[in-house]
Length: 391
Image 1 (cartoon, rainbow, N blue to C red):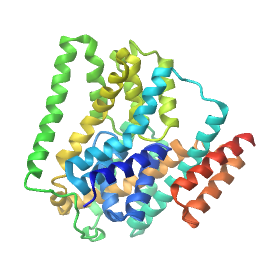
Image 2 (cartoon, rainbow, N blue to C red):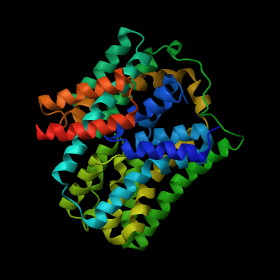
Image 3 (cartoon, rainbow, N blue to C red):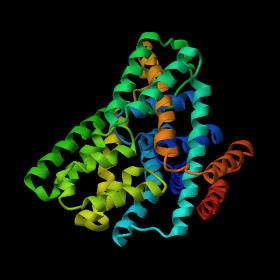
Image 4 (cartoon, rainbow, N blue to C red):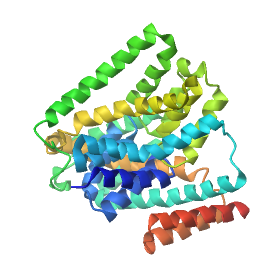
């Protein structure tokens, strides 16, 4: 059994260099926990991704929480979340306090190199997922069809509908034999597992109700409910957070659109989950460092509670024939979604010239062929970004 400190330290290290957004995070998790440490199999990892993409909340962070839960239960999930989120939260709070909206040219160049590395990490993760999940031409057709649909019909609502359609196709046509019948450590850790699930579901509803009452009694606290509600209802990952938060009157009445966009840009440039945009907003809304911490907790809390409500029953759920078919369709749909996201959110705006493509190829060779450790490739990526910008 892994210690809580080791779980925290591993996730903290990942939180310090996981550039590239939610899809890249899944790639880093695969390399660390499937390929390197073998804490779970590729099939189990795919199932986790499918489950977390089907729940509202920050899918990549929820995947990390689930991996922590696998190792040490509820405390493990909290420690994994804290380790992965802490670097990004601190950076976003610092940016808000310093009102930093402009980066130096050299720093922009280094961050550009990190984004080029994210292209490699995401592409490598997608290829590995394809090798693990594709068993027939029908499977590849579903992946390709999902990717095409997501590219032609962007938006969180469209993505959810597409994944629901993939789930329906899985229910109709997916054969249970494609699943490896391996034991999952995501099942109940003790006889209290069902109670944990019930308490998490109750806390999810009760927390929302309390924040609604507080926002009615004290209108100045309405932004707390807004941030919790966004965390409880967002589908599609960190990129969807901006349009949802920008629609909240309790936030936009205080934070100008330019300030919101500046925070969003910073959240994309730094490592870790993009949901820490809430950390920035908590400070900007006049509540200082404490407000930033509270906002961080509130935007991640509902996704964590929903995950706890499901994970103790995961072993029973994953052995259900009907659910296995549905989940198989969702798994393939998620791979198609990630492939489309590789282009629309990772590639576009990052690979803009021949020099960028040359850096991507070089980083691919170092990471995937020579099998260099990620920290060493991160250093090379930063230097390459400086060279690419200079060119």
